[in-house]
Image (cartoon, rainbow, N blue to C red; front, side, top):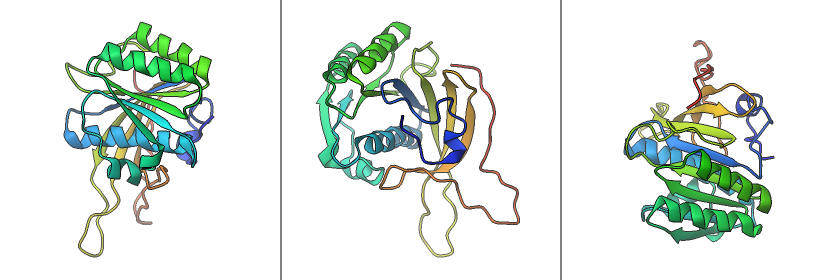
Length: 224
């Protein structure tokens, strides 16, 4: 089990964290580049924490747009990363299955436009066989990328949010609207969080004491 180390999330997850040998999906909240980057870094943070200091993460890309320094800032160091290229969704999923069954990887990340019940069920079985976490990044192509039913244990939507203002010129730590659209065994929720740090950890925003707590925006959403 991989907890986030943040009670605002872990207390709402049915298992108290993310199952190590399971499929977890994420997608950008919109088609914007900033939301796509947020979803990518969200999974990078999970993969980096799963890998620790010695593990290796296989990332199967559909396009050559991974930015290693950005991944490192989210907790996934270049020395932990093995990248494979595949053009079609079917090829991405096939490489993911092989990596998951191998059993020596900390996590396998794959980028797809479509993966339904059959495909995610195969990934789940492969993850269980190899004891490896599968992280599926859904890219926007035609319509909501999480519209299809899935066997994933958790499904997340990640959107960028305005950073906190600073008392001096500059940009504060990035913030994301993190929504658990569906989880097996529990309801969904939504939280405003500070983006992953160099250890892959999220944080609750610090709010002025005179304002009511707006960080916790819980609420169930129909399963996607």
